[in-house]
Length: 221
Image (cartoon, rainbow, N blue to C red; front, side, top):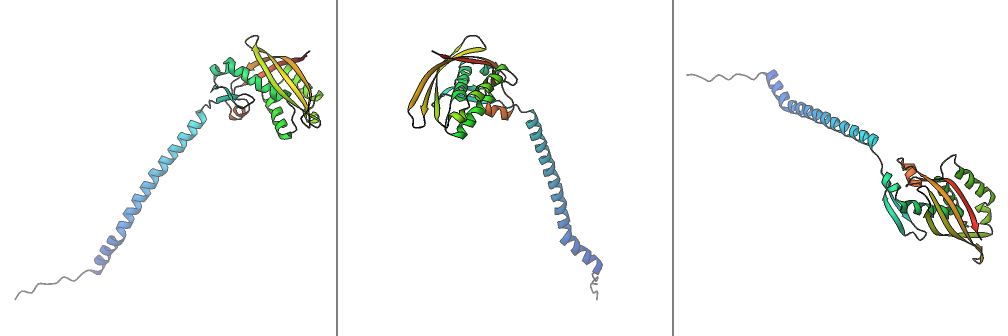
């Protein structure tokens, strides 16, 4: 009679087998997660490097929209070298500059912004800067606003050369109750220079890059 012999299990081998089944899969999955995380990190690093490179080499090209005193569009376009030479844009910029320069309002915030816009379009260390500064010193708008206001209406902006423009405007002075005190006509000559901006801060305050380098005016009798 042949009995089938039963080979007793080895406790060590059984325990090793159970460990492999329980933890071997976990180790394999952890290895896969580490590989995936490394690949994701590499992709993110390359993406960030690409964004930094693009930002360093990006060139901001502003789009300019100029409006008249009623906020109606006068002209528009990308402020590159070609657009800056558009005579309509130059005349519109001078149009707004004269109004900001000569206006007087009881709204102190609006007056300060107007003065800031005026100086943002004057080239540094030029006759125009000295002339306008002297004008503000002798006819301070904040002091005048205590007794009167001045509304400016530009009548014409005509080119007399490729860099010089003749501007005619009318000023209506009113008391604080709105009654007209006087109406005067003025004529001025303004020489400009163009330097289209590439810096965002300059784009916000002088998108066309038009600067006044010389200015003079006189009352028309």
